[in-house]
Image (cartoon, rainbow, N blue to C red; front, side, top):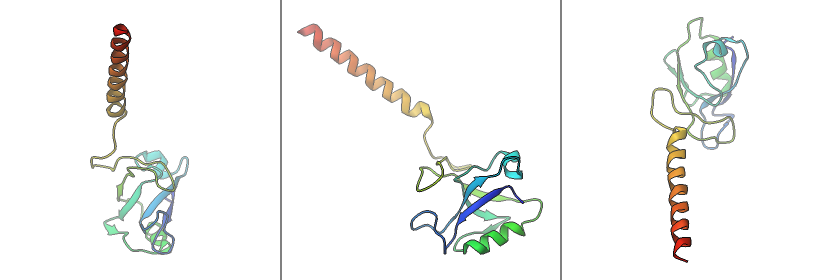
Length: 124
């Protein structure tokens, strides 16, 4: 096998109002694990150029089973967790925020608050 499990489909929506196919589990020492690029929570958009949109779960499973040895996946990393695995940036697309983009403004805000507090205390 390819070394991962999938969830979703038109008949088994994994995310509300979304019938897409998602990676639910990467099997340790399987092909996907050893490759290292696929992550739990990734949305799989296409397999070997075949769009996975509007497929039932069993039909998506069959596509993966018949994908062959050289498999090309088009994926999208999840921006935020929704009822399942952790979210990630989309592969090859912008999205998500690096940790520094959150920490630096937060630290600057904290420093400004401390400075204002100290100035206020000096005036008292």
